[in-house]
Amino acid sequence: MSMEEWIVIGGGQSGLAAAHAVKAVGGRPVVLEAGERPTGSWAGYYDSLTLFSPARYCSLPGLAFGGDPDRYPTRDEVVDYLAGYADHLDVDIRTGHRVEKVVAADGGFEATLADRTLTARRVIAATGGFGAPYRPALPGLDTFTGSVVHAAEYRDPVPYRDKRIVVVGAGNSAVQIAVELARVARVTLASRKPVRFASQRPAGRDLHWWLKVTGVDAAPIGRWLPEQFSTPVLDTGVYRSAFESGHPDRRAMFTNLDATTVTWSDGTREPLDAIILATGYRPGLSYLESTAALDPDGYPQHRAGISTTHRGLGYVGLEWQRTLSSATLRGVGRDARYVVRRLRG
Ligand code: FAD
Image (tube, rainbow, N blue to C red; front, side, top):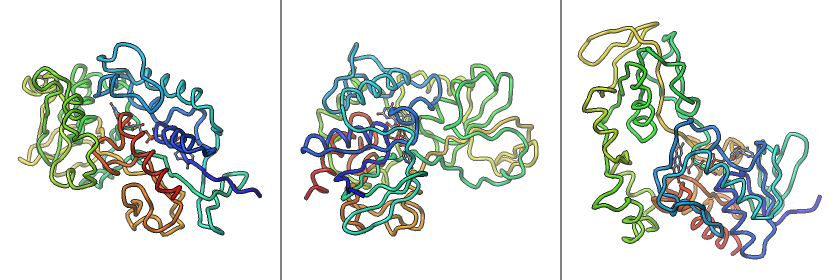
């Protein structure tokens, strides 16, 4: 069996950016993508999703995101952009190739797929920071007989018309989904901490312009910043005014659920139809479980994307991998370049 120089696992923006970086140093990456298209998770995000950054800050290295640079692109525009990027890359992308297991072997790695095993000197795990929807253990959730859906499965408000709904979470997805649903249903956003808003356009400029000119976007701050502050919800004013109008309303986390009712912290109870868990994600790296690469909680042990347990193993696309923008379209290319150079030695 011949050994590849580079295997990249995942064909979303992180895998494509990694493949671009490998090619830039003269390598020939093999990209293994479980799905049918090299466009990552974008097609599965909810229908109304528009990006929080303008198009001028949504490009991967080597191909500009076309059209008006000041518009906020839609989900489907990103899918089209990534499909075009994959074509333009001109590397070996194998769709329908899910990696089941990776183990260290003979100066490299063995990647097991359903019907074959590939070996490589270096592996980049680029399956992203959002591969595994996180479902917290909420009091009484297992007894609730209404609908319980993670934001990763939410598509549009149609099934929720006239229902009583609780959206759990305080981040961008929680707020966007709660405000969208509140147009057709009675919605409460329940969270442990209050929602923190940040202006999308401070002093008349998009926030991403400020992040870029101040250097904050690319500063290698690792996990320091998120440990001090929760990520704010970017808002042009639409979300804040929706909450001010009470549609949706915001409450402290509920204290209990039973089969059909929710109990709030002031002791009031009411019937409930559905819960939407906008409670975040964890990296989807189960294929590394049989190695020591992950800690007991399933997080990779790494420094700035370079595995601290396995020489030749790197990560691209983890949240806060190196910077504020590590897990975004605008930041992933920078990290990919760094990881590839470090792995090359
Ligand atoms: P993914 O898009 O998840 O791609 C990972 C790929 O790996 C998938 O194609 C999957 O099929 C494949 N894969 C997984 N396991 C395996 C395996 N075992 N073998 C082979 N292949 C595998 N970022 C922005 O820049 N702007 C935004 O506005 C923005 N909005 C977001 C909104 C939401 C709701 C979420 C969740 C994220 C958002 N992000 C945004 C963050 C980020 O850009 C996206 O999550 C993006 O999809 C991450 O790309 P990725 O390639 O790292 O991971």
